[in-house]
Image (cartoon, rainbow, N blue to C red; front, side, top):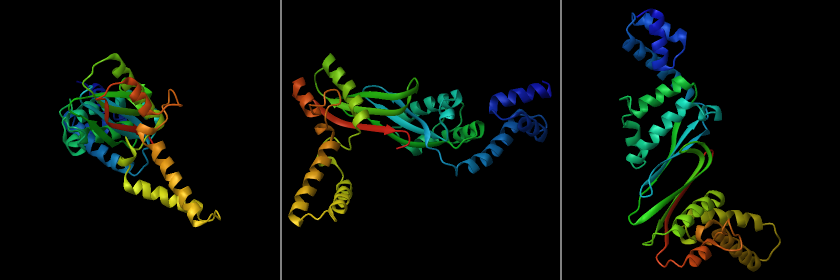
Length: 283
């Protein structure tokens, strides 16, 4: 094999530039495997410098089926890279592994990919090849007994990759088209309305306390008496809970009704929203 052919092959294997490949082959006396290792070491050096930069673009990948579904966020620096085919292929393989390890990021990092290298190693190689900071972000797996998952993708990049993704899990013994339609519509509603929890009781205490502090600050210089201020504060907190609890939100497809009204109209006694997860790039 001529030196030019080796350079071409090394470029295909690593994605590195002509000059870097030529130098690596010279340093390895023409040994391709050693040249790959040299470029990998250099790639790690380049990658570490890139890791100080901001990565708030990227994609959300959905994987799994209606019994076990996962989302994985992979961040990069620019939207251009988010649409790069090498990046897309990398994320799609990652998403399947993520589903298999139930969104355990430690296990995900150590998992082996198709090229027999770990996710960590491939991430470093991808950073060196793409030339941007790439990080693994949030991830979540929903898997509940006797429930069915429904998913929704908004601003789709390609296939299972998008900018915003939702998984919602419904529990019922009934199997019908209206359940499937409601599950699909509910996932779209969650994407649009961004609820905090299923009901007001599930909103975390610290979130309520933060909102109360904001309301108190707002009313501080209003000139209202203490009793009236307390009533206003209570009313605002109750409205906050209502607007941020999925079950009491206005149904996006028919705003005069709430989500709980739509569930009642379905007349399915055992229908229950078990869990949901919404994730958007940049949030």
